[in-house]
Each structure stands twice: as structure tokens, then as C-alpha cells.
Length: 288
Image (cartoon, rainbow, N blue to C red):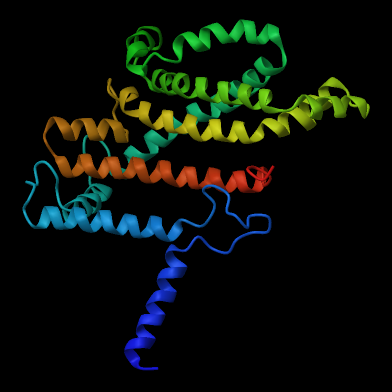
């Protein structure tokens, strides 16, 4: 075999590994919808988008005021990491935002999930919590931002509360939907085996609802990050949203792009962590 043919075979094999869906699992001879490894495609897409960004900016098709080059954003990232911008270094802004988002997320986890489960298993809890949740859920956080300022001032308590409200509803409703997804046959089988109501809730309903609960957590943290900028609009001394808004006022576009990238990277990293938790906690998801 000539060198050219060997190179073609090697390239074909590499591309097949990179973009192939992977080996078919037992019982999936006809291919279930969406199965297969997409990591190679995701990496290729990310590289292609970065290259397109570099090409557009370096060819001068878009002015730096509107879209700075990747090199300019990286240079600004290095500068702000060691020097203050709008009252804090980049790490200071990140720490402030992480505290607000994950503080609100933790509070939502210990309140929304139990309330959602209670709504699913008890009509009284459903009657109490369903109206207020469904009433405020469609309202954008900017709609009740002034009210949180009037009630709580402009300190971190107000910002965490605003993010908490945005995270609470999807997590509670996902937990409720998870409870409703447990089949009556599973519950009846547990009762017929001598289980008490508490045991049924803990061992059958909670475990059956866990996939929906974890999905709700992923959705909730996404709402938390989208609400962060609104929470940091008023009298914030630090935070990624505050940094981005301050940069936008002075048309410092590279800082705006950098802030967007930082928020996206943190959110995506946490989402990958939640996917890992899903695989460990609910390995049966999608297989039944």
C-alpha cells in the first residue's frame, strides 16, 4: 500500500472515530433516537466557530467596536485578572457572582424540591403552593426586581432572593412532575409488600422522581445565570453581570464578550457536572 493510500485510510479511520456514533449497545440493533457519542462533533463545532470568529475579525469584516478579535478578548482577560475593572479584579467579580447564583441555587434545592414532592403526593400542598408558583412563574425577573429592592434593599440578600425566585419555580414543578411520572403499579407493589407511606415516598416515589428532579436542577441553574445580570444591575460593587453592564456603558466590547464567555463557561461546566451526577445517581434514565 502506497503512502497516499495509507494516509487516506488513517484519515478515514480517525474521522470515523471522531464523528462516528460509536458501537451499538445490546438491544439497540435498530438504533434508538439520539444515541451515540457526539463529543467529536461538539469539539469540531467549537473549533470551527472560534476559527470563524478569528477570520471575521482579522479580515476586518466587522469593526472591533462591534466584535473584537479572540486575541483582544484573551489579552483583556489577562489584564483584568490582575488589575481592577469596575471595582474588582476578574476573580473578584467571579467570586461575587458565584456566591449569589449558587447561594440562591442551594436555597432552592432545600426548599423547592421538598415542596415539589409534597405537591405531587398531597393535594393540600398542591392547593397551597400551585397558585402562587403558577402566578409568578411567567413574570420576568425584571418585573419584580423593583419590589425586591423596596423590600430588601440593594445588598446581596436582594440579589440572592431575585435569583432564588427565578430558580425556585422550575425546580419545584420538575419535582412535582417527577412524582407524577411514577407509575401506580410501582406504588401498589410497594404497598402490597408491606411498605409504609413514608417508605413508599422515600424508596419508590423519590427515586422514581429523581431524573426529573435533576433535570429541574439543570434548568433552574440556567435560569439563575440568566437572572444574574438583572440582579446585579442595581448598586452592585462586584459581579460578572455588573462588570458586563459597566463595560457596555463605556463601549468596552472586549470586556462584554469576555464576561459572556466566562458566564457561559461556568454554566456549561456545572451542566457537565450535573450530567455526570445524573449518570451516577440515575443510571437507568432512558433505559426503561
